[in-house]
Image (cartoon, rainbow, N blue to C red):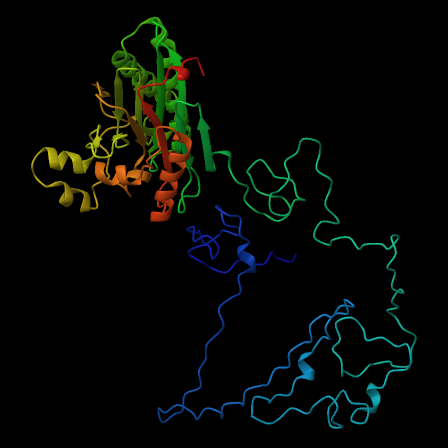
Length: 473
């Protein structure tokens, strides 16, 4: 039984640089066929026994390459130049005989056996100037006369000719547009990985907008968001943005962030119309998100014992709630909220404090902020949602801004490239209050231009909440 060709041993995908395992035949991120990567050439240099390098052959003279004539007004294609038609030299520096020269192997005088009878064709794959084995036998490869009319048959594409027609409703590959996509998200024909729904997401509700992107280095997007708006009992609007960042070292972080964002959003939409104070509603929303993530932890085995909390799904959460007079912020983890006034002469501010190793070092006075965030342990989080988390301590803060502005809610995929409030304000477009979706896109682009090392998610909310933002969404 013949074996499948083995892929070249690579540590990273030559197409997208995603890390690879030794047994991988396709890249898990972009679907690149690793079996097509040529093996590195064997380098066996010749070394003289006396330790000196052998003399190199003299450099061959440069070739005066002919230029093909341009297509004229008659649409006659330019003549094709074959390699054998071009004067040159062999590896020893000797001139190659020209095809018109009698000594050229393809010339009739130089190779009598190469003379073909009238109508004879060269077998497919056999180069010109090569002797026919049976020049006098009937042609085994007859060519049909050219047919330029509408009835001419177009040969089937060998890459797709034998593929079954996808069933109704089946998803076609975005790369070859012929193969069906299997349940794992790969094309059954070309093996190309299909874009995931969460690779890039956008949503706008007029009074709030959010954008999430996989980034340039991760193979999937483990962030999630939820944006909505509702009305308070007095009819005034309340606008909500929830952003969650999956903990990559945990299992199923993408599921954790999605469950947390949905649970928190639904909790706020249920509590606010009933008259619950916005700050209390935010606290309850984070608790609801925590319970949703805890519910994802299933039974697992650790050293033969039942241990459902080992490496359970986990994520961070940050949320902002805007009303005509209040700005409520809540979080657990290291995702952040920034305040950027519309009047850029006013001072911007960061409204959250990270649950992280670096923040603890700064708070304890052991390091300044620059030293702490330069440490390799800086982004180790000390608070998160998940069954294996420590005691849940939601942070909630209430603000009463005295001027209009925009609230930026984001994961560290963005603030890594705009860490201080001043840097974030610089990245936020001047018309962010009027164009929140455009501004969210610009901020995601800012992170991608900076390197896109992580998933990037950002929501932009104008303050105060505009009256047209009311209405459940």
